[in-house]
Image 1: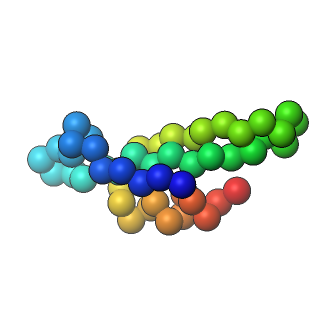
Image 2: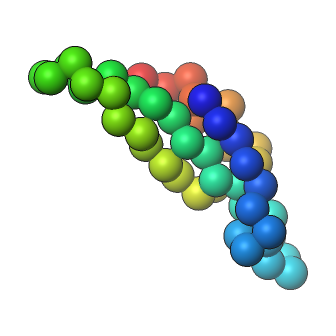
Length: 50
């Protein structure tokens, strides 16, 4: 799990966070990365969902 606030994502009115989560594929068993850009308040919900 990674949480990073990127300077290029910050605008004058909003602050955004890029979250990267590693998930295991149910078909192949290989790991893949899921990236999402969201408000900082929503990061915990993103990491808790499966």
